[in-house]
Length: 459
Image 1 (cartoon, rainbow, N blue to C red):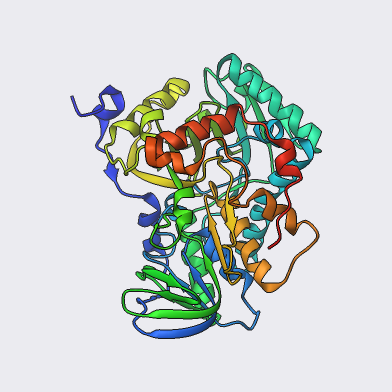
Image 2 (cartoon, one colour):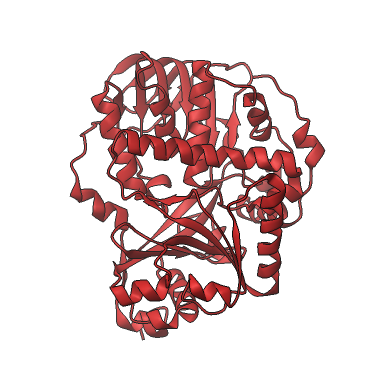
């Protein structure tokens, strides 16, 4: 029997390759060779994921000379390997934020990724970026009694915060919108989308280059000294520097101790036929879905009607290094088919693993190092909307485009906020264990309303 067992493993061999890489061959993209000289700029952005690109977009038409460095190709790391969910949900549900911060602060924090969605979708439409953007409501699915309680808590908290577009479903009612068994409850809301993340970032690359921005791919930052970013064969000296990388090295900054990684796995099918589409979404309304497990399973349709399915296991999620064995995704596929037995003929063709950048409490970090007012670090954004918000936030801060709530976001996302366990403990017990303990605490137990809501820090 092929490795992994089960009916799926018997049917086919999964190719370890990101589907988004496959789709990249459809359109032509600008060639951006490595940096091989010493140059000067007004702004240097390091990192070509959604945070770095969102920052770069803010400088369009600003008159600044901007240089963007990316060690791979734009979207070559976490951003471009993601599932392309444009929803404020990532690792934390709203009811978990309300428990931790209180209603007012949770609503303000939740507004950050909502802004990220708005800014990204507006830019995609404004600049006609061809990236499979599709409107898909979000559907959070409860499993068992605990899942039903989580759905009810989510509904209650959304109402408290002031949202009015949510709709809840019990187990029977879910059958009208999802052809699944075993989910005990669900909550649905709109204003969310799906996107091909790699095509999106490469499309924005074309836009930025065509508007005079210098982008250097295959160019890794080797060290940072004052106003200069050094690479293997060149350097960029800039007035302002935004570092938005997902695997910050300790040689660059001690903030690397604050960066953790959660590993997930994704797979994709051949395009679904009409019967399979009706089975998955009986009402004909597409949704992006995830369940209430600690390491949740998630799925949605792509623009060409392929099923994108992802998830992980409690062990592999917290591994230090990438895990490429297909048995994890085969297990996720098998569990998915238990909920959707009528889709047992689906043909999954490709799978790929990815390590998602995260922080101990699962919220992003925007850091302004002491004595270095010209530098902003952005990291730990779990989810595209969070990355877009933090990247654009850092850029707008440098541009002086600030409104009355900017100080509070620096407070919420400061690297000096309170955490359950200190980062130094990772040197004793290991970062994976430290992350798993903090992750569980943040999701299910932590409460520190007053410390966060009244934090004061000048940037």
